[in-house]
Length: 497
Image (cartoon, rainbow, N blue to C red; front, side):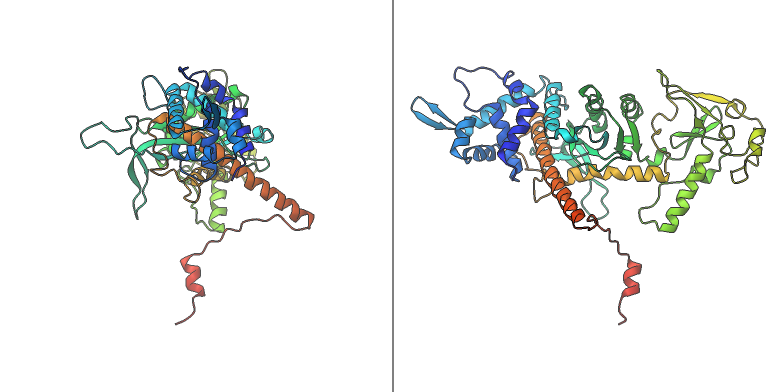
């Protein structure tokens, strides 16, 4: 259970309660339930592993110690004596808040006002000591099923008109995906920088959209506003669901905001994909026209690869990098940069570059250069416009060892939603909240991730204290050993009949 003062500190640091109060109408009689108290009730319910029901909010507030109830306005002095908050008042205040934060014409995306409030609430749940601890973010989306029943076949009428049909991972054997009715929730989770110290995996930003919208496109404006808030963008770790989007929908705006992409490529985007001035476009880079096809068609390393297979794969990707045209300038204001032939930069030997033939023979050698050399072979450098490999260009060569190690950090995004869907805490399955509509669900999810951040911080502090205790005792830090058993190992150790 998270202490009430911690939740009050998050609410006050965010500053969202007084901003919402200014949006609410002024009635004939003053409301007993303030927005600040409502938010505290929502956070308290989620911190106590209870579902996101308004009845639970009312119950959580009315079971606080009497001093806290009076301080928060749950018990107020009325004309005929003390009056305790009723459920009707709780429902009324939440309805006013939802109406004030919703769009005039619902369209399946949160309003700008609602998104800013959710950003501020999540940012307030991150302690100052970790605000600038990392610039890397792992992004992912998940399904959030609405409590409404789907519309009948051939109709569009239901209790939640903003919800829509979407796809999620299938739960049955051999079932890749299944349909659900609801929303997509996206989150950006803090991860350690490549050469930085470990950091707690805190959710820094989130958003929600109807399934009729693309969750990757919905998350882009949330990420690109981070630099304006004083939070620079570093590595953005994303799976192929983001990388396969059009360059203008994901890669270009995120890269334009200062981020570097570290992402898995979709199978349809891997390998050779055209040429530019004779250079082969493959996996986000430009390669020599004489690059062996087997090197360009290398795929990512299998998860169950043996150490020998890993070493062989890393050797092949390292050899592929020798054929890559080297960048010699950074992007200019329009996104153009220049690259040079790998033979001109001393990475390979090529007869078309006589000076390169004097290099050591440990470098790859082009035995059959093109009969009609293209511009990339004749010129010292070529200009690469921003539309070349705009979708697949990223920080590390794909699928090199450096990319594999950097991309391994993306699992933090999976852990963010696994904790949110843990039946032992707050399982956001259907029925988790009976409120319908994008605005109520988004507000509840923002509160849930803020509470989750506090649980992550508690676990982080516990691990740090344990490591300090072990270090004082001269013991190494406790590590989690990965255990993997195979059928072959079980068969080898099985006792004879």
